[in-house]
Amino acid sequence: MGGLRILVLGAGGVGGYFGGRLAQAGVDVTFLVRERRLRRLNAEGLRIRSPFGDAAIAVKAVAAAEDGGRFDAVLLACKAYDLEDAISTVAPAVSDGCAVLPLLNGVAHIDRLNAAFGAGRVLGGLAKIQATLTEDGVVEHFNDWRFLTFGEQDGRMTGRVAALEAAFAQAPGCVAEAVPDVMRRLWEKLVHVATSAGMTCLMRANVGEIVRTADGAALLRRLLEANAEIAARLGHAPSPAFMETYRATFSDPSSGYSTSMLRDIERGAPTEGDHILGFMLDSARSVGVSEPILELACAHVQGLRPATRCRQAPDARPRSVGRGVVTRRLTARPALPRRPSPPDGPQAGAVEGAARPQPPRRCRLRSPRPAPGRAGDAAPLVQAQRSCPALVPSAQAPLSRGIPIEAPPGSSAASVSWGWNSSTPFSASVFWSAA
Ligand SMILES: NC(=O)C1=CN([C@@H]2O[C@H](COP(=O)(O)OP(=O)(O)OC[C@H]3O[C@@H](n4cnc5c(N)ncnc54)[C@H](OP(=O)(O)O)[C@@H]3O)[C@@H](O)[C@H]2O)C=CC1
Ligand SMILES: CC(C)(CO)C(=O)C(=O)O
Image 1 (tube, rainbow, N blue to C red):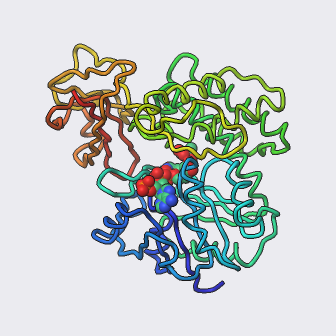
Image 2 (image 1 turned 90 degrees about the horizontal axis):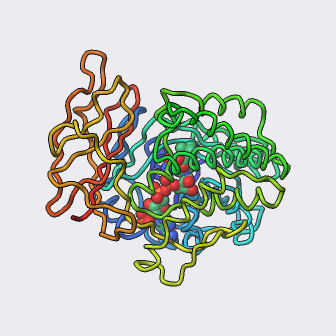
Image 3 (image 1 turned 180 degrees about the vertical axis):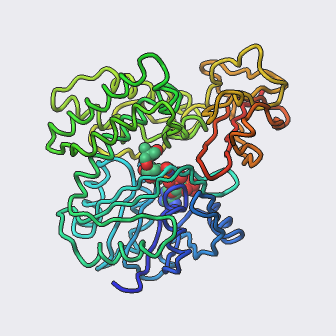
Protein backbone atom coordinates (compact mmCIF):
# COMPACT_ATOMS: atom_id res chain seq x y z
CA MET A 1 0.00 0.00 0.00
CA GLY A 2 2.94 2.35 -0.57
CA GLY A 3 2.03 5.79 -1.97
CA LEU A 4 -1.45 5.64 -0.49
CA ARG A 5 -4.35 7.47 -2.10
CA ILE A 6 -6.70 8.59 0.63
CA LEU A 7 -10.20 10.02 0.38
CA VAL A 8 -11.39 12.02 3.40
CA LEU A 9 -15.13 12.56 3.72
CA GLY A 10 -15.67 15.81 5.60
CA ALA A 11 -13.23 18.66 6.11
CA GLY A 12 -14.57 19.72 9.53
CA GLY A 13 -12.78 19.53 12.88
CA VAL A 14 -11.50 15.96 12.62
CA GLY A 15 -11.35 15.35 8.85
CA GLY A 16 -9.94 18.81 8.19
CA TYR A 17 -7.25 18.44 10.83
CA PHE A 18 -6.00 14.91 10.17
CA GLY A 19 -6.62 14.96 6.41
CA GLY A 20 -5.02 18.40 6.19
CA ARG A 21 -1.94 17.26 8.08
CA LEU A 22 -1.57 14.28 5.75
CA ALA A 23 -1.85 16.56 2.71
CA GLN A 24 0.66 18.93 4.29
CA ALA A 25 3.10 16.01 4.47
CA GLY A 26 2.65 15.34 0.76
CA VAL A 27 0.38 12.29 1.06
CA ASP A 28 -2.09 11.98 -1.83
CA VAL A 29 -5.28 13.16 -0.13
CA THR A 30 -8.60 14.14 -1.70
CA PHE A 31 -11.40 15.71 0.33
CA LEU A 32 -14.98 14.73 -0.46
CA VAL A 33 -17.09 17.64 0.71
CA ARG A 34 -20.33 19.46 0.06
CA GLU A 35 -20.56 22.42 -2.33
CA ARG A 36 -20.10 25.20 0.22
CA ARG A 37 -16.94 23.69 1.67
CA LEU A 38 -15.70 22.82 -1.81
CA ARG A 39 -15.89 26.46 -2.89
CA ARG A 40 -13.98 27.54 0.20
CA LEU A 41 -11.31 24.87 -0.11
CA ASN A 42 -10.79 25.71 -3.76
CA ALA A 43 -10.64 29.43 -3.06
CA GLU A 44 -8.60 29.51 0.13
CA GLY A 45 -7.08 26.08 0.60
CA LEU A 46 -7.46 24.23 3.88
CA ARG A 47 -6.54 26.46 6.79
CA ILE A 48 -5.52 25.03 10.16
CA ARG A 49 -4.80 26.97 13.36
CA SER A 50 -3.07 24.77 15.89
CA PRO A 51 -0.52 24.72 18.69
CA PHE A 52 1.41 22.39 16.37
CA GLY A 53 1.67 24.97 13.64
CA ASP A 54 -0.76 26.95 11.55
CA ALA A 55 -1.07 25.90 7.92
CA ALA A 56 -2.78 26.92 4.69
CA ILE A 57 -2.66 23.91 2.42
CA ALA A 58 -3.67 23.69 -1.23
CA VAL A 59 -5.78 20.53 -1.27
CA LYS A 60 -7.59 18.41 -3.81
CA ALA A 61 -11.32 18.46 -3.19
CA VAL A 62 -14.31 16.96 -4.97
CA ALA A 63 -18.07 17.01 -4.43
CA ALA A 64 -18.65 13.48 -5.76
CA ALA A 65 -16.64 10.32 -5.14
CA GLU A 66 -16.77 9.48 -8.86
CA ASP A 67 -14.59 12.51 -9.55
CA GLY A 68 -11.73 11.24 -7.40
CA GLY A 69 -10.64 7.97 -9.01
CA ARG A 70 -9.55 4.92 -6.99
CA PHE A 71 -8.51 5.05 -3.35
CA ASP A 72 -6.68 2.78 -0.91
CA ALA A 73 -8.52 4.16 2.09
CA VAL A 74 -11.55 6.28 2.84
CA LEU A 75 -11.52 8.24 6.10
CA LEU A 76 -15.03 8.98 7.34
CA ALA A 77 -15.10 12.15 9.42
CA CYS A 78 -18.77 13.09 9.54
CA LYS A 79 -21.11 13.33 12.49
CA ALA A 80 -23.22 10.26 13.28
CA TYR A 81 -26.43 11.92 12.11
CA ASP A 82 -24.86 12.28 8.65
CA LEU A 83 -23.73 8.66 8.43
CA GLU A 84 -26.37 7.38 6.02
CA ASP A 85 -25.73 10.21 3.60
CA ALA A 86 -21.99 9.74 3.98
CA ILE A 87 -22.28 6.02 3.18
CA SER A 88 -24.04 6.68 -0.10
CA THR A 89 -21.66 9.53 -0.90
CA VAL A 90 -18.48 7.48 -0.48
CA ALA A 91 -19.86 4.20 -1.82
CA PRO A 92 -18.60 4.70 -5.41
CA ALA A 93 -15.05 5.10 -4.05
CA VAL A 94 -15.12 1.94 -1.93
CA SER A 95 -13.83 -0.56 -4.45
CA ASP A 96 -12.06 -3.87 -3.79
CA GLY A 97 -8.97 -3.33 -1.68
CA CYS A 98 -10.21 -0.05 -0.29
CA ALA A 99 -10.29 0.24 3.52
CA VAL A 100 -12.93 2.34 5.26
CA LEU A 101 -11.65 4.06 8.40
CA PRO A 102 -14.40 5.78 10.43
CA LEU A 103 -13.25 8.40 12.95
CA LEU A 104 -16.64 9.02 14.52
CA ASN A 105 -17.17 8.87 18.25
CA GLY A 106 -19.35 6.01 19.46
CA VAL A 107 -19.52 2.39 18.35
CA ALA A 108 -22.95 1.86 16.77
CA HIS A 109 -21.77 3.02 13.35
CA ILE A 110 -19.41 0.04 12.98
CA ASP A 111 -22.29 -2.42 12.50
CA ARG A 112 -23.91 -0.09 10.00
CA LEU A 113 -20.67 0.25 8.01
CA ASN A 114 -20.12 -3.51 8.10
CA ALA A 115 -23.56 -3.96 6.61
CA ALA A 116 -22.92 -1.34 3.93
CA PHE A 117 -19.39 -2.27 2.86
CA GLY A 118 -18.66 -5.72 4.33
CA ALA A 119 -16.80 -6.15 7.63
CA GLY A 120 -13.59 -7.02 5.81
CA ARG A 121 -13.30 -3.50 4.45
CA VAL A 122 -14.13 -1.65 7.66
CA LEU A 123 -11.50 -0.70 10.24
CA GLY A 124 -12.13 0.65 13.70
CA GLY A 125 -10.81 4.12 14.40
CA LEU A 126 -10.97 6.98 16.84
CA ALA A 127 -9.65 10.49 17.14
CA LYS A 128 -8.62 12.17 20.35
CA ILE A 129 -8.41 15.86 19.62
CA GLN A 130 -10.33 19.04 20.34
CA ALA A 131 -10.92 20.78 17.05
CA THR A 132 -13.72 22.62 15.33
CA LEU A 133 -14.50 24.27 12.01
CA THR A 134 -15.00 27.99 12.55
CA GLU A 135 -17.53 30.11 10.69
CA ASP A 136 -14.73 31.52 8.55
CA GLY A 137 -13.71 28.04 7.44
CA VAL A 138 -10.65 27.52 9.61
CA VAL A 139 -9.96 24.22 11.34
CA GLU A 140 -9.22 25.40 14.87
CA HIS A 141 -7.31 22.98 17.08
CA PHE A 142 -7.60 23.83 20.76
CA ASN A 143 -5.16 21.73 22.77
CA ASP A 144 -2.30 19.29 22.56
CA TRP A 145 -4.46 16.23 21.84
CA ARG A 146 -3.64 15.07 18.32
CA PHE A 147 -4.10 11.31 18.52
CA LEU A 148 -5.48 8.78 16.06
CA THR A 149 -5.92 5.13 16.94
CA PHE A 150 -7.07 2.53 14.47
CA GLY A 151 -6.92 -1.15 13.65
CA GLU A 152 -8.61 -4.18 12.18
CA GLN A 153 -11.83 -5.17 13.90
CA ASP A 154 -10.44 -8.69 14.37
CA GLY A 155 -7.16 -7.39 15.79
CA ARG A 156 -4.82 -8.56 13.02
CA MET A 157 -1.89 -6.23 12.35
CA THR A 158 -2.28 -6.12 8.57
CA GLY A 159 -0.31 -4.39 5.88
CA ARG A 160 -3.03 -1.81 5.37
CA VAL A 161 -3.07 -0.62 8.96
CA ALA A 162 0.73 -0.51 8.94
CA ALA A 163 0.62 1.54 5.72
CA LEU A 164 -1.83 4.00 7.25
CA GLU A 165 0.33 4.31 10.35
CA ALA A 166 3.35 5.00 8.15
CA ALA A 167 1.44 7.68 6.22
CA PHE A 168 0.45 9.47 9.42
CA ALA A 169 3.98 9.17 10.77
CA GLN A 170 5.02 11.73 8.13
CA ALA A 171 2.31 14.19 9.10
CA PRO A 172 3.12 17.09 11.43
CA GLY A 173 1.00 17.51 14.56
CA CYS A 174 -0.32 13.92 14.49
CA VAL A 175 0.36 10.89 16.63
CA ALA A 176 -1.20 7.85 15.00
CA GLU A 177 -1.08 4.28 16.22
CA ALA A 178 -2.28 0.99 14.73
CA VAL A 179 -3.46 -1.27 17.55
CA PRO A 180 -4.55 -4.92 17.92
CA ASP A 181 -7.52 -4.09 20.19
CA VAL A 182 -9.34 -1.28 18.47
CA MET A 183 -12.83 -2.41 19.52
CA ARG A 184 -11.87 -2.14 23.19
CA ARG A 185 -10.38 1.29 22.43
CA LEU A 186 -13.64 2.37 20.79
CA TRP A 187 -15.54 1.37 23.91
CA GLU A 188 -13.05 3.20 26.10
CA LYS A 189 -13.53 6.31 24.00
CA LEU A 190 -17.30 5.89 24.33
CA VAL A 191 -16.96 5.69 28.12
CA HIS A 192 -14.79 8.80 28.00
CA VAL A 193 -17.09 10.81 25.72
CA ALA A 194 -20.35 9.72 27.35
CA THR A 195 -18.88 11.01 30.61
CA SER A 196 -17.39 14.26 29.35
CA ALA A 197 -20.19 15.10 26.91
CA GLY A 198 -22.89 14.07 29.39
CA MET A 199 -21.57 16.30 32.15
CA THR A 200 -20.36 19.27 30.07
CA CYS A 201 -23.72 19.43 28.26
CA LEU A 202 -25.73 19.14 31.47
CA MET A 203 -23.64 21.77 33.19
CA ARG A 204 -22.87 23.96 30.13
CA ALA A 205 -19.39 24.16 31.54
CA ASN A 206 -15.98 22.67 30.94
CA VAL A 207 -14.42 19.98 33.12
CA GLY A 208 -12.48 22.40 35.34
CA GLU A 209 -15.56 24.52 35.96
CA ILE A 210 -17.53 21.41 36.91
CA VAL A 211 -14.78 20.12 39.19
CA ARG A 212 -14.67 23.49 40.96
CA THR A 213 -18.31 23.16 42.05
CA ALA A 214 -19.03 21.50 45.39
CA ASP A 215 -20.07 18.11 44.03
CA GLY A 216 -18.84 18.30 40.45
CA ALA A 217 -15.82 16.01 40.76
CA ALA A 218 -17.91 13.36 42.53
CA LEU A 219 -20.61 13.55 39.87
CA LEU A 220 -18.08 13.23 37.05
CA ARG A 221 -16.46 10.30 38.81
CA ARG A 222 -19.81 8.63 39.39
CA LEU A 223 -20.76 8.91 35.70
CA LEU A 224 -17.33 7.64 34.61
CA GLU A 225 -17.60 4.59 36.87
CA ALA A 226 -21.17 3.87 35.72
CA ASN A 227 -20.22 4.10 32.04
CA ALA A 228 -17.24 1.83 32.64
CA GLU A 229 -19.50 -0.68 34.40
CA ILE A 230 -21.91 -0.68 31.45
CA ALA A 231 -19.04 -1.32 29.04
CA ALA A 232 -17.65 -4.05 31.29
CA ARG A 233 -20.99 -5.87 31.53
CA LEU A 234 -21.10 -5.90 27.73
CA GLY A 235 -17.65 -7.47 27.60
CA HIS A 236 -15.64 -4.30 26.87
CA ALA A 237 -14.13 -3.43 30.25
CA PRO A 238 -11.85 -0.38 30.05
CA SER A 239 -8.27 -1.07 31.08
CA PRO A 240 -7.04 -0.06 34.56
CA ALA A 241 -4.67 2.42 32.88
CA PHE A 242 -7.59 4.06 31.06
CA MET A 243 -9.57 4.37 34.28
CA GLU A 244 -6.61 5.84 36.12
CA THR A 245 -6.05 8.42 33.37
CA TYR A 246 -9.66 9.54 33.22
CA ARG A 247 -10.20 9.59 36.99
CA ALA A 248 -7.39 12.15 36.96
CA THR A 249 -8.73 14.01 33.89
CA PHE A 250 -12.15 14.33 35.47
CA SER A 251 -10.87 15.62 38.78
CA ASP A 252 -8.59 18.38 37.52
CA PRO A 253 -9.86 21.77 38.71
CA SER A 254 -7.64 23.64 36.24
CA SER A 255 -8.86 21.72 33.19
CA GLY A 256 -10.19 23.72 30.24
CA TYR A 257 -11.44 20.54 28.57
CA SER A 258 -14.76 20.85 26.78
CA THR A 259 -16.54 18.65 24.22
CA SER A 260 -17.71 18.89 20.64
CA MET A 261 -21.24 18.05 21.81
CA LEU A 262 -21.30 21.12 24.06
CA ARG A 263 -19.88 23.24 21.24
CA ASP A 264 -22.66 21.92 18.98
CA ILE A 265 -25.34 22.83 21.52
CA GLU A 266 -23.85 26.26 22.06
CA ARG A 267 -23.95 27.05 18.37
CA GLY A 268 -27.46 25.69 17.88
CA ALA A 269 -26.25 22.78 15.74
CA PRO A 270 -27.49 19.18 15.74
CA THR A 271 -25.84 16.89 18.29
CA GLU A 272 -24.75 13.27 18.44
CA GLY A 273 -26.77 12.83 21.63
CA ASP A 274 -28.53 9.68 20.44
CA HIS A 275 -25.38 8.09 19.09
CA ILE A 276 -23.39 8.64 22.30
CA LEU A 277 -25.70 9.18 25.28
CA GLY A 278 -28.78 7.41 23.89
CA PHE A 279 -26.69 4.39 22.95
CA MET A 280 -25.04 4.32 26.38
CA LEU A 281 -28.41 4.58 28.12
CA ASP A 282 -29.90 1.77 26.06
CA SER A 283 -26.81 -0.29 26.77
CA ALA A 284 -27.19 0.45 30.50
CA ARG A 285 -30.76 -0.73 30.46
CA SER A 286 -29.88 -3.87 28.54
CA VAL A 287 -27.43 -4.92 31.28
CA GLY A 288 -29.43 -3.75 34.29
CA VAL A 289 -27.41 -0.65 35.21
CA SER A 290 -29.41 2.34 36.39
CA GLU A 291 -27.60 5.67 36.41
CA PRO A 292 -29.72 8.81 36.89
CA ILE A 293 -26.97 11.18 35.69
CA LEU A 294 -26.87 9.34 32.36
CA GLU A 295 -30.67 9.40 32.15
CA LEU A 296 -30.71 13.11 32.88
CA ALA A 297 -27.93 13.92 30.39
CA CYS A 298 -29.72 11.96 27.70
CA ALA A 299 -33.08 13.58 28.46
CA HIS A 300 -31.44 17.00 28.56
CA VAL A 301 -29.87 16.69 25.12
CA GLN A 302 -33.04 15.14 23.68
CA GLY A 303 -35.01 18.03 25.18
CA LEU A 304 -33.18 20.43 22.88
CA ARG A 305 -35.07 19.09 19.89
CA PRO A 306 -38.66 20.28 19.85
CA ALA A 307 -38.06 23.66 18.24
CA THR A 308 -36.31 21.95 15.41
CA ARG A 309 -39.18 19.79 14.57
CA CYS A 310 -41.09 22.87 13.47
CA ARG A 311 -38.15 24.36 11.62
CA GLN A 312 -36.32 21.53 9.93
CA ALA A 313 -37.60 18.06 10.50
CA PRO A 314 -41.39 18.00 10.66
CA ASP A 315 -41.57 14.23 10.90
CA ALA A 316 -38.92 13.79 13.56
CA ARG A 317 -40.06 12.40 16.89
CA PRO A 318 -37.88 12.69 19.96
CA ARG A 319 -36.88 9.14 20.83
CA SER A 320 -33.87 7.12 21.64
CA VAL A 321 -32.70 5.19 18.63
CA GLY A 322 -31.55 2.17 20.55
CA ARG A 323 -28.37 0.61 19.27
CA GLY A 324 -28.96 1.84 15.78
CA VAL A 325 -27.32 4.78 14.15
CA VAL A 326 -29.01 8.12 14.02
CA THR A 327 -30.28 8.68 10.55
CA ARG A 328 -32.21 11.89 11.00
CA ARG A 329 -30.48 15.21 10.88
CA LEU A 330 -31.97 17.26 13.68
CA THR A 331 -31.15 20.85 14.35
CA ALA A 332 -31.22 21.88 17.96
CA ARG A 333 -33.09 25.00 18.91
CA PRO A 334 -31.10 28.22 19.10
CA ALA A 335 -28.71 28.36 22.02
CA LEU A 336 -30.18 30.03 25.06
CA PRO A 337 -28.33 32.77 26.85
CA ARG A 338 -26.15 31.60 29.69
CA ARG A 339 -26.59 32.69 33.28
CA PRO A 340 -27.29 36.43 33.56
CA SER A 341 -24.22 38.63 33.62
CA PRO A 342 -23.31 39.94 37.06
CA PRO A 343 -24.40 43.53 37.73
CA ASP A 344 -20.89 44.85 38.17
CA GLY A 345 -19.74 43.61 34.77
CA PRO A 346 -17.68 45.68 32.36
CA GLN A 347 -18.94 48.17 29.83
CA ALA A 348 -21.52 47.19 27.27
CA GLY A 349 -20.11 45.33 24.30
CA ALA A 350 -17.07 43.93 26.07
CA VAL A 351 -15.94 40.44 27.00
CA GLU A 352 -15.94 39.98 30.72
CA GLY A 353 -14.91 37.26 33.11
CA ALA A 354 -11.32 37.87 32.23
CA ALA A 355 -10.43 39.33 35.60
CA ARG A 356 -10.31 35.88 37.20
CA PRO A 357 -6.97 34.38 38.09
CA GLN A 358 -5.72 32.84 34.94
CA PRO A 359 -6.17 30.79 32.97
CA PRO A 360 -9.70 32.10 32.55
CA ARG A 361 -11.98 29.37 31.30
CA ARG A 362 -15.11 31.20 30.45
CA CYS A 363 -16.07 34.72 29.68
CA ARG A 364 -19.35 36.44 29.39
CA LEU A 365 -20.34 39.08 26.97
CA ARG A 366 -22.32 42.19 27.58
CA SER A 367 -23.97 43.83 24.64
CA PRO A 368 -25.57 47.22 24.18
CA ARG A 369 -28.91 45.46 24.35
CA PRO A 370 -29.52 42.62 26.79
CA ALA A 371 -30.24 39.24 25.23
CA PRO A 372 -33.96 38.59 24.96
CA GLY A 373 -33.50 34.84 25.18
CA ARG A 374 -35.91 32.75 27.14
CA ALA A 375 -36.86 29.12 27.05
CA GLY A 376 -38.53 28.29 23.76
CA ASP A 377 -37.35 31.43 22.02
CA ALA A 378 -37.12 30.36 18.39
CA ALA A 379 -35.46 33.51 17.07
CA PRO A 380 -32.89 32.59 14.46
CA LEU A 381 -29.38 32.48 15.70
CA VAL A 382 -26.66 34.44 14.05
CA GLN A 383 -23.24 33.14 14.82
CA ALA A 384 -20.09 35.13 14.81
CA GLN A 385 -16.76 33.56 15.49
CA ARG A 386 -13.70 35.60 16.05
CA SER A 387 -10.13 35.07 16.87
CA CYS A 388 -8.93 37.27 19.64
CA PRO A 389 -5.16 37.27 19.39
CA ALA A 390 -5.09 40.16 21.84
CA LEU A 391 -6.17 37.79 24.56
CA VAL A 392 -2.87 36.01 25.11
CA PRO A 393 -2.60 35.29 28.81
CA SER A 394 0.61 35.88 30.67
CA ALA A 395 1.67 36.40 34.24
CA GLN A 396 2.51 40.01 33.39
CA ALA A 397 -0.73 40.79 31.64
CA PRO A 398 -3.63 38.95 33.13
CA LEU A 399 -6.89 39.45 31.33
CA SER A 400 -8.29 42.15 33.48
CA ARG A 401 -9.93 44.22 30.80
CA GLY A 402 -12.59 43.30 28.29
CA ILE A 403 -12.05 43.72 24.60
CA PRO A 404 -14.74 45.39 22.55
CA ILE A 405 -16.78 43.15 20.29
CA GLU A 406 -19.41 44.74 18.11
CA ALA A 407 -22.79 43.10 17.91
CA PRO A 408 -24.12 42.55 14.37
CA PRO A 409 -26.95 44.99 13.64
CA GLY A 410 -30.25 43.87 15.13
CA SER A 411 -28.73 41.20 17.33
CA SER A 412 -27.78 40.86 20.92
CA ALA A 413 -25.25 38.73 22.68
CA ALA A 414 -26.24 35.31 23.89
CA SER A 415 -23.00 33.76 25.05
CA VAL A 416 -19.32 33.51 24.42
CA SER A 417 -16.85 30.75 25.06
CA TRP A 418 -13.21 30.35 24.23
CA GLY A 419 -10.45 27.86 23.93
CA TRP A 420 -7.04 28.26 25.49
CA ASN A 421 -3.76 26.50 25.61
CA SER A 422 -0.28 27.36 26.65
CA SER A 423 1.06 28.27 23.24
CA THR A 424 -1.78 29.81 21.26
CA PRO A 425 -4.02 32.81 21.64
CA PHE A 426 -7.55 32.54 22.76
CA SER A 427 -10.14 31.87 20.18
CA ALA A 428 -13.49 33.24 21.23
CA SER A 429 -16.73 31.96 19.80
CA VAL A 430 -19.43 34.55 20.18
CA PHE A 431 -23.05 33.60 19.78
CA TRP A 432 -25.66 36.18 18.92
CA SER A 433 -29.39 35.85 18.99
CA ALA A 434 -31.58 38.07 16.85
CA ALA A 435 -33.18 40.78 18.94
N1 LIG B 1 -14.30 17.82 16.88
C1 LIG B 1 -13.63 17.10 17.76
O1 LIG B 1 -12.83 17.65 18.52
C2 LIG B 1 -13.83 15.63 17.82
C3 LIG B 1 -14.82 14.99 17.10
N2 LIG B 1 -14.89 13.63 17.12
C4 LIG B 1 -15.90 12.92 16.34
O2 LIG B 1 -15.55 13.00 14.97
C5 LIG B 1 -16.72 13.02 14.17
C6 LIG B 1 -16.67 14.26 13.28
O3 LIG B 1 -16.74 15.38 14.15
P1 LIG B 1 -16.30 16.84 13.68
O4 LIG B 1 -15.13 16.77 12.79
O5 LIG B 1 -16.22 17.63 14.91
O6 LIG B 1 -17.57 17.27 12.84
P2 LIG B 1 -17.71 18.53 11.88
O7 LIG B 1 -19.15 18.86 11.86
O8 LIG B 1 -16.72 19.58 12.24
O9 LIG B 1 -17.28 17.95 10.48
C7 LIG B 1 -18.02 16.99 9.81
C8 LIG B 1 -17.99 17.36 8.36
O10 LIG B 1 -18.51 16.27 7.61
C9 LIG B 1 -19.15 16.84 6.51
N3 LIG B 1 -20.11 15.91 5.92
C10 LIG B 1 -21.09 15.24 6.53
N4 LIG B 1 -21.75 14.48 5.66
C11 LIG B 1 -21.17 14.69 4.46
C12 LIG B 1 -21.42 14.18 3.16
N5 LIG B 1 -22.39 13.31 2.91
N6 LIG B 1 -20.65 14.62 2.14
C13 LIG B 1 -19.66 15.50 2.37
N7 LIG B 1 -19.37 16.02 3.60
C14 LIG B 1 -20.12 15.60 4.62
C15 LIG B 1 -19.85 18.06 7.05
O11 LIG B 1 -20.08 18.93 5.98
P3 LIG B 1 -21.10 20.17 6.07
O12 LIG B 1 -20.34 21.20 6.84
O13 LIG B 1 -21.29 20.49 4.64
O14 LIG B 1 -22.29 19.66 6.81
C16 LIG B 1 -18.84 18.58 8.06
O15 LIG B 1 -18.04 19.60 7.56
C17 LIG B 1 -17.89 13.01 15.14
O16 LIG B 1 -18.37 11.71 15.31
C18 LIG B 1 -17.28 13.51 16.45
O17 LIG B 1 -17.95 13.03 17.60
C19 LIG B 1 -13.98 12.86 17.77
C20 LIG B 1 -12.98 13.46 18.48
C21 LIG B 1 -12.87 14.86 18.63
C1 LIG C 1 -14.07 14.05 24.16
C2 LIG C 1 -13.33 14.55 22.97
C3 LIG C 1 -12.90 15.98 23.12
C4 LIG C 1 -12.07 13.73 22.88
O1 LIG C 1 -11.44 13.77 21.67
C5 LIG C 1 -14.20 14.33 21.80
O2 LIG C 1 -14.15 13.31 21.19
C6 LIG C 1 -15.26 15.27 21.44
O3 LIG C 1 -15.33 16.37 22.00
O4 LIG C 1 -16.06 14.93 20.57
